[in-house]
Length: 85
Image 1 (spheres, rainbow, N blue to C red):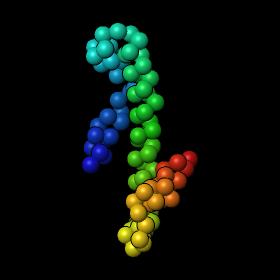
Image 2: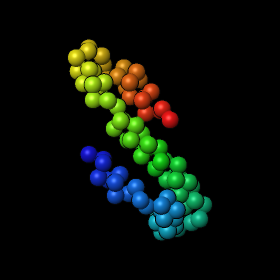
Image 3: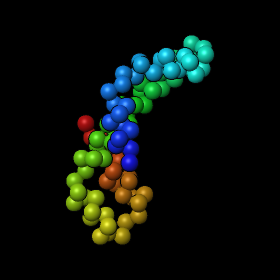
Image 4: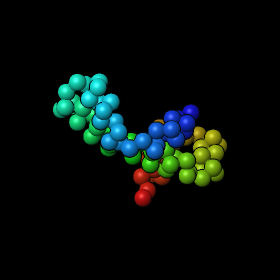
């Protein structure tokens, strides 16, 4: 669901958000905070999406066979796989 949005916004440089921030906030300090937020958040979102996409299909389908809850699946499988470098 989020893949089209990520693929559209991925090539946009984070510094290209500065004019939008200046237009929305009408002051330099809030716009700078906004740009820093976008510059740090966007790579985390993209890398997390790539990490989740690279989880083997057998790992995600094995969850359906086990009786684990979704929170346990997130902590034991998704989070460690997304944080690998």
